[in-house]
Image 1 (cartoon, rainbow, N blue to C red):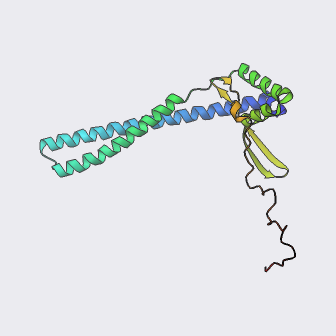
Image 2: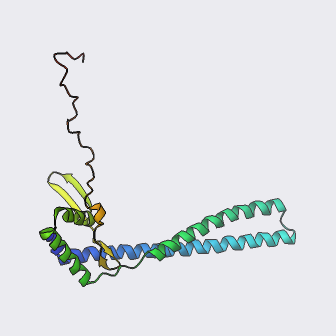
Image 3: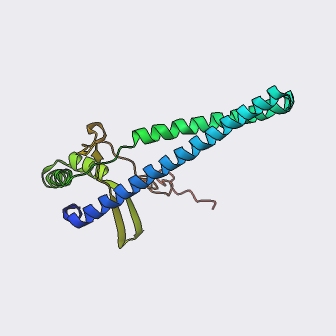
Length: 190
């Protein structure tokens, strides 16, 4: 990990890729919001046309009512999506990462690994390791994340430091075989 965090080129490339993904996601959400707003305007205009046709007597009450009800449902769905996208865009902040932030991260990682207690080291690893892919016994690839919050390094939550997730798929302490103590010389019927 110390080698990885010390590689400026690797960290810079990863951050550039992350910023590009973040920008692409934001642009996608903005584009979708534009489409939703255009569809919303079209549906509202259609309702207005149906009302005008009804008032002019060229459209029956039943036909107008059914169509307006369908469009009303579509408008409700579009407004919900519009609100959701607006909230997403408001919450998405353009990350600003400077060389000072990266230097702070490097210093924190090195200091914690070299001088921190085991619980602090564990918390740091939990904060930095995004996932681990195991292809074989000789091919294990860790993927790291840079924990930034508003441009600054976020500390691991101290209440999470002592928590250990039980390994999944592990055998119980006694193994998979049922215990044989206390069975004496009984023979198995299997």
